[in-house]
Length: 343
Image (cartoon, rainbow, N blue to C red):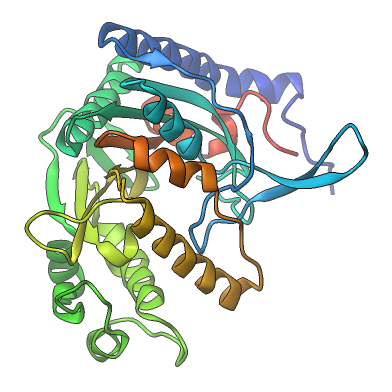
């Protein structure tokens, strides 16, 4: 068997180079877009006390060696979110960070352990504005590469067609035959037995409401999103939105959205939760799940909770730059749009 060709083989690099140059053009256009709207680019440190407190996010850890030889645990961040929120508390109002993040246990055609995230925040602006930003940037990427149609594994989406807006509950009704809100109590608490009784997919006997929700979402709902046009999936159940504030009209759902094209998730955004006490409660609950499932938990960033008490109302979103470049350039896997793929 012939040895595998490395990414730095001149022939293979020549095949990848058009995608990489498209990436550079998109990055330049994005920076110009933000500059025109008075955003400031920030550069958030990658080493963090806590990499994030979501149960199913997995981080890379390392040791910080102090001058006296003692050590402290640090993590490569899974998102610049915690640092960005501290900057909002400090007084910044429109910021974006374009940089690398790290997530373990993730390597597929659309996942890399190290990838580039575009994350931005607007203080004192609602999350509908952030959604509009996201749709605009998707179109900007398409215009920059001259593509009129995104294509991915036999699916197509016109980035310039009017987006489909679906609440999570409506999406579950339409594509899985499940009234999700009927499985949530008035205060937002999830009823695992109620969801298990109507689930159209198989699940294990010890799986939680969130486990069953995730299975239905990935098997029945997500494949139907972003086909023909972009889909904005919004109003996630509050139990699936640990960093988002609940909506004013219904405490069962939160101001969280995701953007899909060709069944590929491109962005995940929130109307940001600024109640430090509630945020702590949610983080502890997430880490309890993580410890039960994976046998580990990450520390809570106490500075973040201090910052939340000072932070103004805000909205923010994280967009996977590499995935957007893939769709805009016609690449078929994420390594084609990474200048130096992870070994």
